[in-house]
Length: 183
Image (tube, rainbow, N blue to C red; front, side):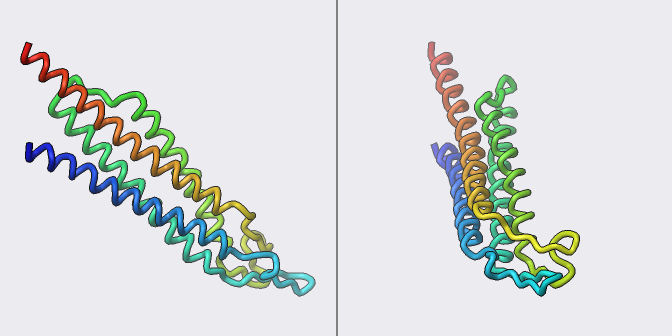
């Protein structure tokens, strides 16, 4: 009984940490959306443009770090849980729903990372003549950070769902084993 409680705690506590990092990343994405450079921040001298650094730059980096930590922690829980099940039961296979959710988490993670990196780098200072790309200044399009925030929720939700689906499957397998041994 004590090992069962310890096992649940070793899965639930890291999930809570992963969810917490996901919520922080989501919040930072929303804050970045509010703090991003706007058209009124753009300075034009007739030939060259200049954009000052925005607070969204630091917030975006923090959102990237939190998203990365949430994804890594969530996947570590999933793989630790799956590997320990495989050691106890050679017949154990990861459920299809867990595989599908894991694929969704990595796809949404990849897209969110790309969007956050591009948007965050655009909120860095863009000096006269240098700009963001080829000497031109670029503004982050409205909704880019909000879209990243939605992808953060999809990433964290699907990796946690994947982890929970492997736990439920394992509990069902253990229940059928107990009934088989008794009969």
